[in-house]
Image (cartoon, rainbow, N blue to C red; front, side):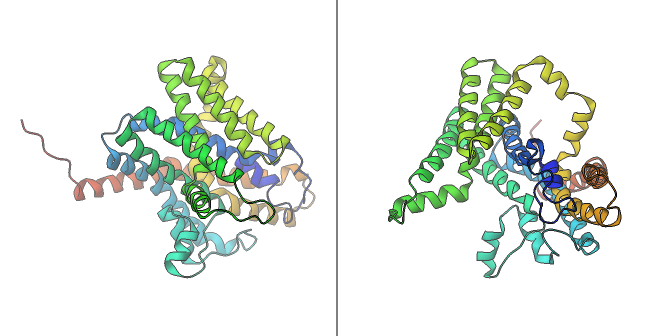
Length: 342
């Protein structure tokens, strides 16, 4: 969804075909793939937490999941950027690798370094939110327990929505307390926590079969969709994504479709594909449009899409597992497992 959004709708001012496809819903609302990703993440992270012995173990597993592909893709993006001057984000400098490799947004780095800070790819923003979710939900899970952690996530989301409703109108003064709370909630990523919490509730339903969890998940995702949408069409599109996710959890036919080899393969390569695709793909779309203007507009992005998929497959199936295994070996030497008495 996100890939199609970036290939056909996000950069209408620089595509060779202009804004021809910006009104097509499957392209125009493809950015909702990020919200779908947040729901999937909530589902998977609660499942992961139940298998971890503690917070540090959980965070280490998450780091080993995210960092290898991020490092490989960041190096690739940086060393190849010069061959793609059409990149929408422009040409990066070495320091632009900091936000991605640390999973900390450029704003924080700009404050720490007292200088403007860029990022290799704009899509990395969702990873910054993801890591904040890991930290907050992981801490609440191990300190308070599963249900209290889920309640905490939902409350943070609703507090974020409420703080948005309390923003000053027509220049009216905002109280210092509301302003501080709004700022903290925004930088914690709480405005996205409704999606994560709903995904975790869907996991509880998937595991235990309690209709109460399913009902709460549906209500929470509908609230998240209403809070997300800036108009009726966006809300409807978000609700369609909610419906798709709900079907994948509750309907046997949908589960069989999701288990198709093509979708499973796309799932395997999805993380490096997400990291790599935007600037590289859009630059290639511009280049192909320049050298082959006779191609039908709908076909111009196909070759770039296939190329970034092939690159993502190499990362996901070869480079990433190799690097992760090496990192595990280093961690095992630095942090050996405690010995057990015989």
